[in-house]
Image (cartoon, rainbow, N blue to C red):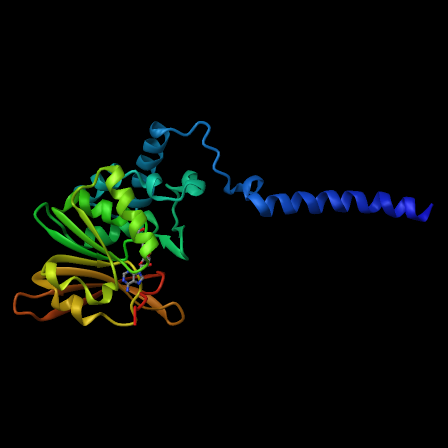
Length: 252
Ligand code: SAH
């Protein structure tokens, strides 16, 4: 009789446990599922327009080229498939290998700070998904992007090609050293936080050029810094806002 009663008590507990396990296993019923029914290019374009309106323009980004670029780049194609429905949300997203694609506003803000024009050559350190590179490629003439993690770099290279960007060169390596063979650059953007501003990058910036870089550590805090190289080679540094980026890694 006691065993029977215990059996009845155990059954619902077991069912709940099984349900929880199923959730953990597939992440489906827990909200991360890629339910693409009802999602098509038109829906994504509408979400993108809302993103630009409420996350980017509303926060003060004004450069028409940046706004056009943010409207043009299909961010959902740079996000892992199972997170695609979250592509246009106001936050960074994991892209694998412990890395993240930045929040759309930060991408727009950093791009605006570079004051790019159509004849510019830009260096990006930290290709990641390739999304920031695509935004830069919408505005500038040529983008060089370096990624330290081979797997991410190769995927981004393929992705950028598939989406149709022909003016982006992806290199695998340690971006701390920049790309001396292709320097000088009109603008440099670093999308991982460095404890200090890498000297080779300052050297590879053209006089009159601009560099935007998160400086600091997760523990002590990071700030987005805008560096302007004056015509006489001198440097001007301006702190923009506090940020949170993955760390700039080193090869050696
Ligand atoms: N710009 C990316 C997001 C960057 S996340 C996007 O739009 O998706 C930061 C990236 O910098 C990661 O992919 C990380 O692997 C890379 N990274 C970190 N240290 C690096 C280094 N020293 N050189 C090049 N890439 C680096």
